[in-house]
Image (cartoon, rainbow, N blue to C red; front, top):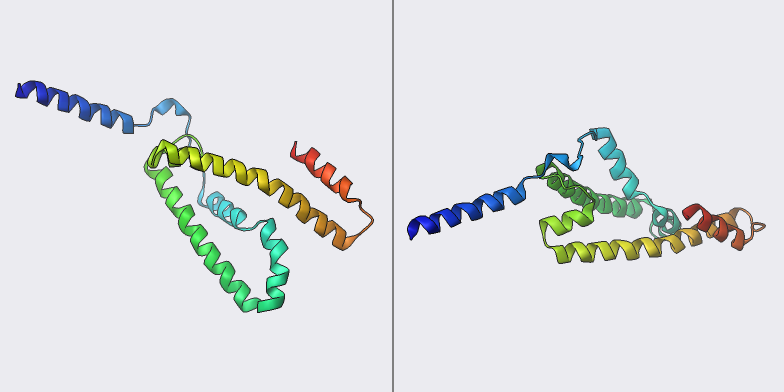
Length: 157
Protein backbone atom coordinates (compact mmCIF):
# COMPACT_ATOMS: atom_id res chain seq x y z
CA UNK A 1 0.00 0.00 0.00
CA UNK A 2 2.85 2.39 0.86
CA UNK A 3 4.50 1.75 -2.52
CA UNK A 4 1.31 2.79 -4.35
CA UNK A 5 1.06 5.99 -2.29
CA UNK A 6 4.73 6.75 -2.90
CA UNK A 7 4.33 6.20 -6.65
CA UNK A 8 1.26 8.47 -6.82
CA UNK A 9 3.08 11.15 -4.79
CA UNK A 10 6.07 11.00 -7.17
CA UNK A 11 3.72 11.25 -10.16
CA UNK A 12 2.03 14.31 -8.64
CA UNK A 13 5.40 15.98 -7.99
CA UNK A 14 6.49 15.24 -11.57
CA UNK A 15 3.29 16.81 -12.95
CA UNK A 16 3.78 19.93 -10.78
CA UNK A 17 7.40 20.26 -11.92
CA UNK A 18 6.29 19.77 -15.53
CA UNK A 19 3.76 22.60 -15.19
CA UNK A 20 6.54 24.99 -14.10
CA UNK A 21 8.76 24.29 -17.11
CA UNK A 22 8.25 26.69 -20.01
CA UNK A 23 8.23 24.90 -23.37
CA UNK A 24 11.05 25.90 -25.69
CA UNK A 25 8.76 26.36 -28.69
CA UNK A 26 6.96 29.45 -27.37
CA UNK A 27 9.27 31.69 -29.38
CA UNK A 28 10.55 33.80 -26.49
CA UNK A 29 13.77 35.64 -27.25
CA UNK A 30 15.89 37.60 -24.78
CA UNK A 31 16.97 40.48 -26.98
CA UNK A 32 16.20 43.49 -24.76
CA UNK A 33 19.30 45.38 -23.77
CA UNK A 34 19.59 47.49 -20.63
CA UNK A 35 19.19 50.64 -22.72
CA UNK A 36 15.90 49.43 -24.23
CA UNK A 37 14.49 48.60 -20.81
CA UNK A 38 15.47 52.03 -19.46
CA UNK A 39 13.93 53.82 -22.44
CA UNK A 40 10.74 51.81 -21.96
CA UNK A 41 10.60 52.88 -18.31
CA UNK A 42 11.14 56.54 -19.19
CA UNK A 43 8.54 56.37 -21.94
CA UNK A 44 5.94 54.89 -19.63
CA UNK A 45 6.45 57.61 -17.03
CA UNK A 46 5.94 60.51 -19.44
CA UNK A 47 2.43 60.82 -20.79
CA UNK A 48 -0.23 63.27 -21.84
CA UNK A 49 -1.54 63.66 -18.29
CA UNK A 50 1.87 64.90 -17.18
CA UNK A 51 1.91 67.65 -19.79
CA UNK A 52 -1.74 68.60 -19.28
CA UNK A 53 -1.54 68.93 -15.51
CA UNK A 54 1.98 70.24 -15.07
CA UNK A 55 1.15 73.90 -15.73
CA UNK A 56 -1.44 74.28 -12.97
CA UNK A 57 0.69 72.45 -10.42
CA UNK A 58 3.77 74.46 -11.35
CA UNK A 59 1.81 77.69 -10.92
CA UNK A 60 0.33 76.72 -7.53
CA UNK A 61 3.20 74.92 -5.78
CA UNK A 62 6.44 75.80 -7.54
CA UNK A 63 9.16 73.73 -9.15
CA UNK A 64 10.41 72.04 -5.96
CA UNK A 65 7.11 70.37 -5.14
CA UNK A 66 6.60 69.44 -8.77
CA UNK A 67 10.01 67.76 -8.86
CA UNK A 68 9.34 65.99 -5.55
CA UNK A 69 6.02 64.62 -6.79
CA UNK A 70 7.57 63.48 -10.06
CA UNK A 71 10.43 61.78 -8.18
CA UNK A 72 8.07 59.91 -5.82
CA UNK A 73 5.89 58.83 -8.75
CA UNK A 74 8.90 57.51 -10.65
CA UNK A 75 10.22 55.64 -7.61
CA UNK A 76 6.98 53.64 -7.44
CA UNK A 77 7.03 53.18 -11.21
CA UNK A 78 10.61 51.87 -11.04
CA UNK A 79 9.69 49.43 -8.26
CA UNK A 80 6.77 48.01 -10.26
CA UNK A 81 8.95 47.80 -13.38
CA UNK A 82 11.66 46.01 -11.39
CA UNK A 83 9.16 43.49 -9.99
CA UNK A 84 7.89 42.67 -13.47
CA UNK A 85 11.46 42.34 -14.74
CA UNK A 86 12.25 39.87 -11.97
CA UNK A 87 9.15 37.80 -12.76
CA UNK A 88 10.01 37.67 -16.46
CA UNK A 89 13.64 36.82 -15.73
CA UNK A 90 12.76 34.03 -13.33
CA UNK A 91 10.13 32.39 -15.51
CA UNK A 92 9.36 33.91 -18.93
CA UNK A 93 5.71 33.84 -19.90
CA UNK A 94 4.63 34.60 -23.45
CA UNK A 95 2.27 37.52 -23.18
CA UNK A 96 1.96 40.78 -21.33
CA UNK A 97 1.38 41.75 -17.71
CA UNK A 98 -2.19 40.46 -18.03
CA UNK A 99 -0.87 36.96 -18.67
CA UNK A 100 1.65 37.38 -15.83
CA UNK A 101 -1.10 38.20 -13.34
CA UNK A 102 -2.99 35.08 -14.37
CA UNK A 103 0.13 32.94 -14.25
CA UNK A 104 1.64 34.18 -10.99
CA UNK A 105 -1.47 34.84 -8.87
CA UNK A 106 -4.72 33.48 -10.26
CA UNK A 107 -6.64 33.32 -13.51
CA UNK A 108 -9.37 35.50 -11.96
CA UNK A 109 -6.82 38.26 -11.31
CA UNK A 110 -5.59 37.91 -14.89
CA UNK A 111 -9.15 38.39 -16.11
CA UNK A 112 -9.65 41.42 -13.86
CA UNK A 113 -6.35 42.97 -14.96
CA UNK A 114 -7.28 42.39 -18.61
CA UNK A 115 -10.65 44.12 -18.21
CA UNK A 116 -9.02 46.94 -16.25
CA UNK A 117 -6.51 47.52 -19.05
CA UNK A 118 -9.29 47.35 -21.67
CA UNK A 119 -11.29 50.02 -19.82
CA UNK A 120 -8.16 52.14 -19.35
CA UNK A 121 -7.43 51.98 -23.08
CA UNK A 122 -11.04 52.90 -23.83
CA UNK A 123 -10.97 55.94 -21.54
CA UNK A 124 -7.52 57.21 -22.46
CA UNK A 125 -8.40 57.72 -26.15
CA UNK A 126 -11.02 60.45 -25.49
CA UNK A 127 -8.67 62.05 -22.95
CA UNK A 128 -5.87 62.21 -25.49
CA UNK A 129 -8.19 63.72 -28.10
CA UNK A 130 -9.38 66.32 -25.57
CA UNK A 131 -5.80 67.13 -24.59
CA UNK A 132 -4.78 67.58 -28.22
CA UNK A 133 -7.81 69.84 -28.75
CA UNK A 134 -6.76 72.03 -25.79
CA UNK A 135 -3.19 72.29 -27.05
CA UNK A 136 -4.26 73.12 -30.61
CA UNK A 137 -6.81 75.68 -29.34
CA UNK A 138 -4.08 77.34 -27.27
CA UNK A 139 -1.88 77.89 -30.31
CA UNK A 140 -4.59 78.66 -32.86
CA UNK A 141 -8.37 78.95 -32.51
CA UNK A 142 -8.82 78.68 -36.29
CA UNK A 143 -8.59 74.88 -36.24
CA UNK A 144 -12.07 73.36 -35.88
CA UNK A 145 -12.47 70.84 -33.05
CA UNK A 146 -14.35 68.45 -35.31
CA UNK A 147 -11.30 68.22 -37.60
CA UNK A 148 -9.04 67.44 -34.65
CA UNK A 149 -11.41 64.77 -33.31
CA UNK A 150 -11.96 63.24 -36.74
CA UNK A 151 -8.23 63.21 -37.51
CA UNK A 152 -7.41 61.56 -34.18
CA UNK A 153 -10.09 58.92 -34.62
CA UNK A 154 -8.78 58.12 -38.10
CA UNK A 155 -5.21 57.88 -36.78
CA UNK A 156 -6.33 55.58 -33.96
CA UNK A 157 -8.09 53.33 -36.48
